[in-house]
Image 1 (cartoon, one colour):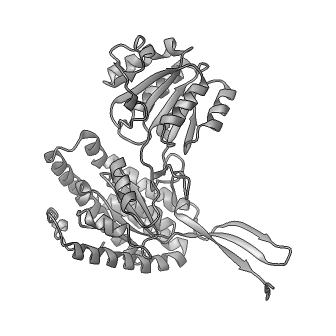
Image 2: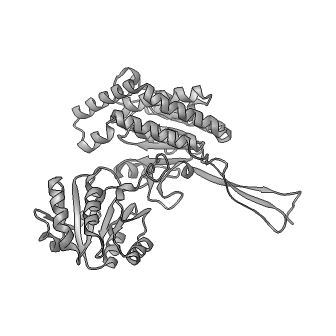
Image 3: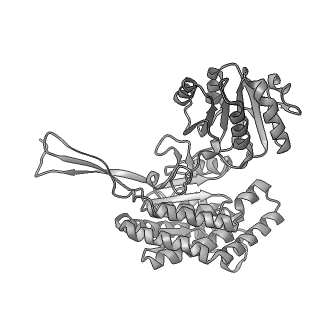
Length: 439
């Protein structure tokens, strides 16, 4: 990956405190021009060649396991010295199992049908013209993210599979891990005879680089930020090129009056506790009043054992020992921690109205044995993923069979929900005639 004017991160140093803005701008724009050139090669490259790079990348991650874990350990030491929050340290950590999962994800992406060149529609017009709608790469994609080093390999793999060049800008807390992964990516591209500038990692941690990257009109086609709401809003505020985003993951689990109580308790508990610091965790549990006495005391006992702080409406407090009284700001909050909001509702309509008002259109779930209630919930909850009798935590590109995800979009244009390789493509029309002219 191209190095900027900071220096010596390969040797384990720390980035310079501040770089010259002109130098940063020059370097980022040069990377974007190189990415644009590489994108032209990728757009016409045989899918087998792109897959070859992906297989080499997966193998390379495992072959260089010790170096990657060492780089990650250095990042973790720095993060702890700087007092980073435990959820961020958790996202930053690479283990042997996590590394294996990263390689498995890349191999799954390599094994998928090539999205580039797929015919989405084809038909003949009465005048004899043949119309085809064909999937093509977007071009150059900038991905800006925090903490998670696995995003470096996931993003690179998805962009390569979809024929896009990408420029990656990770957080300063994971710079060493990201650079170690980026080195393997570059080696994999070279071995597959692909322009190594197809995937570039920005070495500088200076925030000025983001401002240059997201305003590189004509060079960068799309920006995808992954991280907290503050990061995403900062990108959106600066960007002059299209951004696919999700600001918050305010996910709900609604326990219907006809729910199986055992299932309801298990799903609601798991949706909150099993990965509380990620965007598909449940932040609010809505419980129908007719089943609340059978569900809430049991759920509260499990939450207390897991040290989950409960913030409940006044009606529910009597069924939840040690629950705090919720305030207005708790409804619609993305806690990303062992904190959950709990509220009783009088009907499924009230639950849907609450989700409509306070949700973020990310992922919401209903637990019910009533097929009509499930249908109503699915039809009326306008979220990217709607779950029936399943945890919100299933909203994930890998679990959807996409291999990995570039992000989970709560936008409606151009993609929605977990985004895989096909979602990193656009399309063009090919019109074939026989000397046709229009008069």
